[in-house]
Length: 338
Image 1 (cartoon, helix red, strand yellow):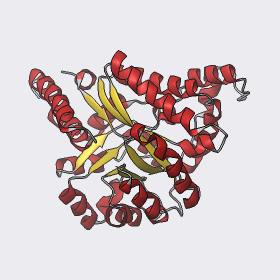
Image 2 (cartoon, one colour):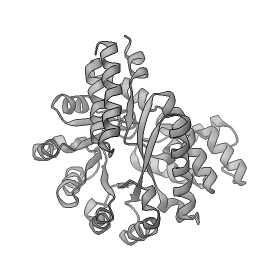
Image 3 (cartoon, one colour):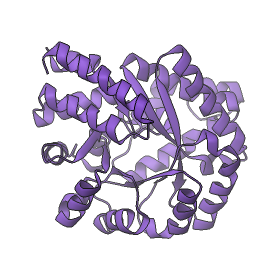
């Protein structure tokens, strides 16, 4: 079977997806019109022209201003449901998705509007599209630690709607240790923990060490620079932690998909997963990321199945639901001879 066809039918689990990063140009224009916001563009082509960057910093300079079109609970619902519709079409069965409430609250949007809009979309998508999901609230690391703690406090009345706590945005000068107290509180409140350790950033391996040893995260987002320190690789291996890799976004912000590194970690038994990050900006959802990696690293069908097995294994799922998804995966692999 052709790799693209095999990937299309593969039951998938996505663990590294920023809902705000799924803002496609047509939806951005529609939300701007609905909310009476002048964004300076009037066509899809003009919006797409603004989605240009060559580093993490230049990407974030485009990414955050685009969020101004998100104002009401319905806006957040529409954004999430649009992503989930695309995910369902790519046979994503389960997704744990990031959102950045600090950015919205800082613009005067109530926290409740953000979380309820996103959560309602997840509920409707499970019923109507057959794709289930959960929310991971991300701390914006280039904002002060007291803002992070205030955001966590604001989230606690809604913590039954939030599965995990993450850390994203500009890594320069913003190590995991800056947020140790916030993540300790999050763990005490029952939230699962993950952190971005972006590709080829300043002090990346030390940030990975802090995330693993000082914070005690349960997953690493990106994180492949750990290969620069074999001790970190061994910690990840011993704990059975997952890495949520995103080949296409790697290429946009570093000029390299890091496919050989991702494939080597996979073949070395590390629980590598493949995800789409900010697909509206990087031009590829999870299927395109899997195909990109498969072609660049000459992955077999069995290795593609293993990537999805890893994802379901490290997802924060109840055991019975995990078993159900893995059974679907095994049935597909058997049917395809993988």
